[in-house]
Image 1 (cartoon, rainbow, N blue to C red):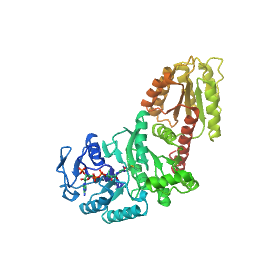
Image 2: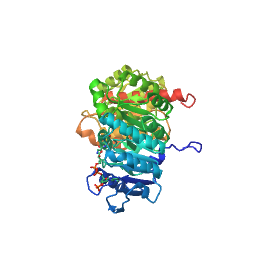
Image 3: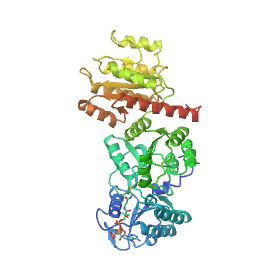
Image 4: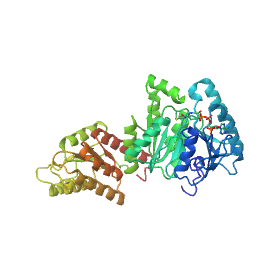
Length: 469
Ligand code: ACO
């Protein structure tokens, strides 16, 4: 954050110094007990205060009968009392000047008119007292960067540059586990629940200011204030990728009873996302595919893509799908063609895509990929490994890792994506690539779509900063 940039108002809530759990329960497995335990076990460095009028001590900590009696300023209160008690508790938080509350409790807007009315009353009290609300009906949040688990379901992701915002709590937890398996690092994971106060736009603004976040990935069921969302998303300097669920009548009905969301007309969302420069993902794999590429590779300066492959078929599929998606597979410059001729066997035609044929080893793989990266006609490359008989996946992975390190060191704005096609035998190598933060995809279509996302983001950056890009 620059000296002039003001701290985002949500920073105090997502990076609190003091946390209270109101409704901290004495009984293991109750949500209020597990929430307190999660705050404690993740190694949060700030102070923690359980609040429960029926207990003296929980998990070794002194318990306070009311938030008003906590002998400290409180930045964040996590609320896990039943719905009928929440209004009273939020009123006390306002009197205590708590900066923000996470309302995990369900039973509000998603239940119909009566719940909506209670949600409105709570919001009214919070607004008057300057208390921000995350939820209600949320899984809470996880600040992986600062080891704070402010949620009731155990499980922290690896630390990394992708922020995940989700309107579904359970799906969000599933996505955390998937991210761990995929070796994707997350900065913040935020469940928005019913979005009575803090909404997607507020979170985009906050995450744009968060130094640990490079890419914002979102699962959205409905947006309440389209104008605010569009304005903030357009201003955001970081890439946003988003799933918008509830496209069909059946999906929209399910969203309404899940989080009280108005799913709205899909065409309108599509247009809003396009205007805001948001890259729309069709599902979770796509969301992660795009986020992985955007988090770990530079955006290209143009749309000319080079392909290197040890299998001709994969190269053709990539070329077709790139062109079908509006990208180019350009001719190589005469200089590159000449240099490729010097290093490749005579049977290989030096052209884009470069088909290295079945017996390629490390040198052929690495040297030809480097020549493509040095070609002025090429803005980014997809390097493919097909696990055919003579293939040497370990050597190819070594080549990719070396090239990715080099483009980072040289700050070359040419992304390298990998497409690794095979079965269990190459899994170990693929895992090594993922651990080294190299975007690797199991199919030609997934690799191309990730490249399309990078190219689109590059175009957006050039439109926003024509002199820098
Ligand atoms: N202040 C503080 N603590 C209080 C107060 C008070 N005023 N009044 C009662 N408590 C204590 C209780 O004594 C109890 O502690 P104890 O177990 O030691 O006695 C504790 O608060 C919890 O109260 P319970 O009445 O036991 O409530 P319970 O744990 O059964 O349920 C809960 C509360 C979990 C909030 C429930 O109402 C609920 O909403 N569950 C669903 C939560 C959920 O799924 N949320 C969102 C999912 S994710 C998504 O995104 C869709």
